[in-house]
Image (cartoon, rainbow, N blue to C red; front, side, top):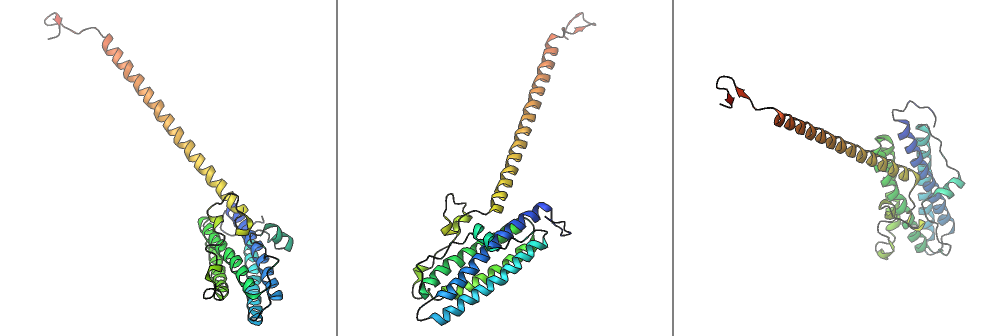
Length: 250
């Protein structure tokens, strides 16, 4: 991390840069997949889909720049190479047997949907870290991705609504164990770090509560001991003699 005057703790900046690089990998991969569909789509609606897929790719290319610049603004490095995107993306590959317009639309609905839902979770993560500027950036990107998803889904909603998956990529939010990458379910590095920090905080709180209970138990034991000593002292004292009457008591 580079030194920066941005008013956020270095740990927060480091976490945000890791999250931004994950988003950069997803965005770069999805952009190339939209280009792939743009180049190879066939069918009766070829021209309209050819233009639509290219428009989505251009939008994602702009998003990649915005994400990378935010990462560097926080003092980090933008890992935006094709190799980095291929190694870290959470977006599944378009199946090799897809060729027609409806098939490409269906494939991109799922992948753009996964990306859009991932962006929503990044908004929440940035807010949790008190990085409102990064959260605002993600909000704008999320809104534009949802718009492109709407353009895609409109081709299916009336003729084949069952082809639209519900909550694609939701497995990641639910902490799916063993989820395949085809659902965008691989937890990103920043999420694992966040969970580790939370577990450490819970462990620390549990340890503190245990220490408080032990301290209270010790105090109770000391009080009981003092009470026993007082009782013993009281019983061992000789009976008081009244000098006026020469007898015990009154």
